Image (cartoon, rainbow, N blue to C red):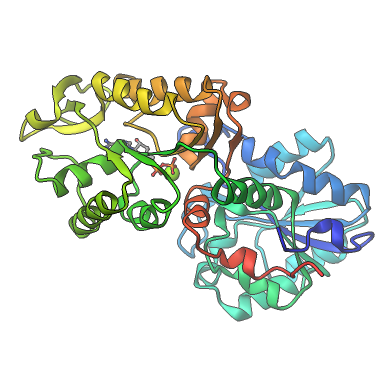
Length: 396
Ligand code: ADP
Ligand code: MG
């Protein structure tokens, strides 16, 4: 990576503002953090700064409060978990800017850790507002970006703030860029990308770029319905974004021209509704009943995709194959997760849900790398510049 990191700047005794991604999954009923890997992923940077007696001011977003204070989206539970992991207190504030925050920052001693309140309680954060970025910047001496998963967004705390402070990368950001970078620079072939999940329009756009790098694209999950529709299959009541159908059709055409193989499901698990009471039924892909929706890939598709993955030297996986949160629709996702974890290939997994699946199955150590970014890793792999990375200082 050609950007400066925390190693390249004197942090000793400084007030260091660190943008982290503490947008952890929580149990909606109890509010408990169900997976703290995003918190743990920021530890190398935090520990490095602590060892050098910096005062650390952490900033993060959490959930989608849309510019308003939402009590369920406060960061206090995250601060509590971080303090358990660090075995030292982590202070919190009720806001991320303002007089109370300034007072708390002033009181920080070397080696103290403070976590500011959810950045997205202010609409200015996602709008990339310069005044808000400046107010955040005024709290510290140095800015560190360690929030790879949000670095594809030109938000105030991601790219805006870098205009006002010396801005460098944290270790997580560095590792992400280096690992994903080597994937597109010199991947061992065959290179297969497996896509699924629900964010069709986001993902379809980056597929165009990724297609230039891979030999084979496997498409399952909610996304598959859009591609099937583009090939004039009836997909029943499956979620299809009309604008994306044309893009999908274009991609299929382009793939044919450039010799990239795109494989779609040949069978599917369908249901009336996507809830835990729904009955699952396997049908051939050209036999989807008009009142049913695709909830998972079927066993023949699992076999087809497995065959392709097994002969690959590089695999990138983003997006579950079905509604994996519901047991009867999780089989396709679990089968391919297991298979990918057992491959003797470079295997990189990205995406919030996908990373959760890998983690919950205890397979994190069995793949080469689990990216903490979903959209960010896709945009990077697609060859796009990430605003949060571009904004950092170049290495001398
Ligand atoms: P990631 O977080 O890994 O990037 P996405 O956010 O794109 O993945 O999508 C994850 C979601 O996609 C999951 O909540 C899952 O239930 C949903 N999903 C997967 N397959 C389907 C489908 N066939 N229909 C509806 N939703 C689906
Ligand atoms: Mg997701």
